Image 1: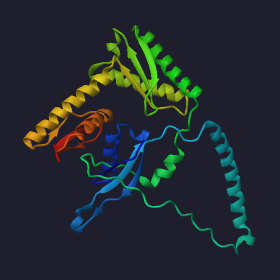
Image 2: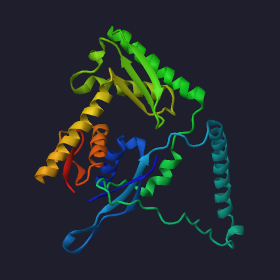
Image 3: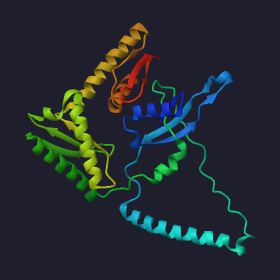
Image 4: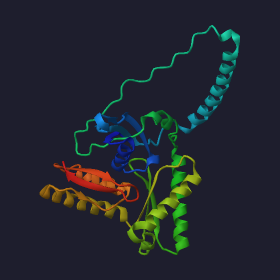
Length: 291
């Protein structure tokens, strides 16, 4: 997944904009602070915060390497203890101090001339976050996670007494996608898809209990999410046209990060308008304004 770059009055605001653009929760993203906000005369904002973000990669080193890395970690821990003991020894006093290792060159910045000019967040923790990236899973492990999701959702259908079928596959970005279809599955949708969100969260927790290296998970019921995505894109294009005609910004209803991403992506392909997000979760909303 490529990095996106966003700006805001604060680092947190820039991070929120980046999450809107990526359409994921903060736990599924990694951030890098490119530039902190700077204040000018009388406390006025002179330079906005600039951050980079991307969806956390799902496939760092293979599992076999994890075992090697754990053994290597124990060796390093032992080596650090021996180094500490050696530093306490008088024979080490004449040794020159160890110089810190230089890190890589300057960070690459992406062009921000487009209407979506959003950034990502917290660069100081990037190395730490990369170390916590989930390891690469084998085909057998991925299949086991898909089976765990299918088993949980099948059990949920039985518990609700709903006749339906569960289909589980993989998305292009490496997430597990589960679809529940049938005549009576509307019970699992609920008002404003509230029940669907609860089902997805329960399935995600069940998957996390099954494997500590669980993949991201999306659950759909009766094709609701795809219909919602198409309807949102059509509605966003209509509002953008109104903004172009009137020259006045329009604020949409509060929506989740995934829905906000659909709006951002749709409007950012239209010349003359731009998008921004305002408010705090769960009342965060997209504002469409003239560019």
